[in-house]
Length: 455
Ligand code: ADP
Ligand code: MG
Image 1: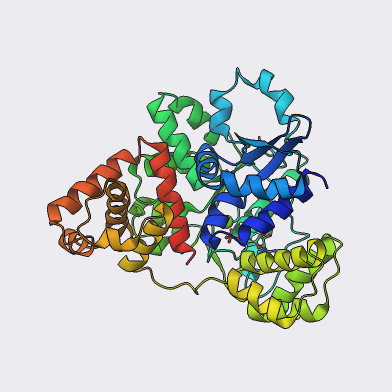
Image 2: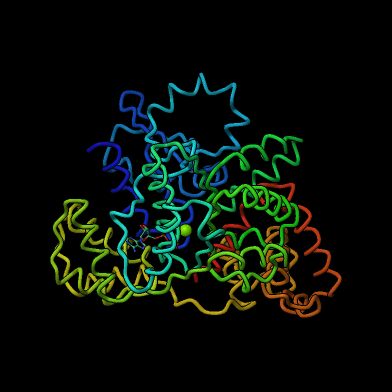
């Protein structure tokens, strides 16, 4: 077995041992960078520092055990950050360091182009078009032929796992190809954009940052909803937006909801978005889901019985990431465990993978997700407990109730341990001022929000 196969096996084992949200958040984007059988050390790659620390502290033991079951010679594990979307921020910071890092990076299979942040695996060829994404796809393709002129900005929205990132990335890739690299494209998640702005402000490097974003011909920002409510970032984005717009540069934006439904989005940004083209992606129908599965099997050269694909397509309806998750698990059992997938097994896999259908987030959801994230009992958050480890989760929950649900301070205080409204005000103010200075805190909140929206 090579590293990839070993890791696939290891993940398959771990997935059965920890909760699905934890698995998805911390391990889904992990990889086995190298395996030194002589020294007995494996090198595990995680996408960022935060995940690295988290995995090292919490999952080291189970990873090691499971890897040793496959490779007895491995005695220990080391962890490294392997950025997948090679962060341009790091580029600025690490210009000098790159020379001694190249030796290591050759080991690492980074598929994303660090200049554009585009991953070639997302193409139109493997993107299935149906009534749910017809409009969004047509608009994207129209843009390719007439950059900056036709629909600007193009704003695509739709629920989690419905193919926004795939479409955005495929559009970027197609532009590069169509224009033979003569058009510069930059893809960025809004989370990275926020980090860049915060970092640049702190380090007085705003000029570098401005140049980076304003020099491109096509700027693609994914998941813009996370920008809402972050004043400095919104302002920076607004200026960038205007500069690009005035110079007829193309802007493509995605969000999990339409501009009007991002409550904290500044009015001027909202109206800018509404001035372009807005297209949504809705839930794909059965035929489309089946087509996605069949294409996947074909591309991977894997045989799966039609009956199984049909069942998956009929049962997993609302999230294509879940659809793929079920598919991958079926492959895993079939290929690595040599198990026959019967209906019972399939139902089991499906019920593990499918999450509750999206609904409006409530205060209790916030408490539950925050508690789950920090692995503390949610009862401790809602009672008068003064335990030290509850302080931060409780403050974050208060902040999120204010930020996402616009709850009143007395109500927030009441919900979280019958506290006074001044405690709630203090918590919300503390978190919102710290969020801009503390990237780890920011990251935690982004992850928690992501999990909330994915419910
Ligand atoms: P989003 O960004 O909207 O949350 P993604 O673009 O990440 O969703 O899609 C989730 C997964 O489903 C990806 O692996 C993507 O390739 C796949 N997918 C989604 N829609 C399609 C489609 N129409 N055709 C093929 N694959 C799709
Ligand atoms: Mg996405």
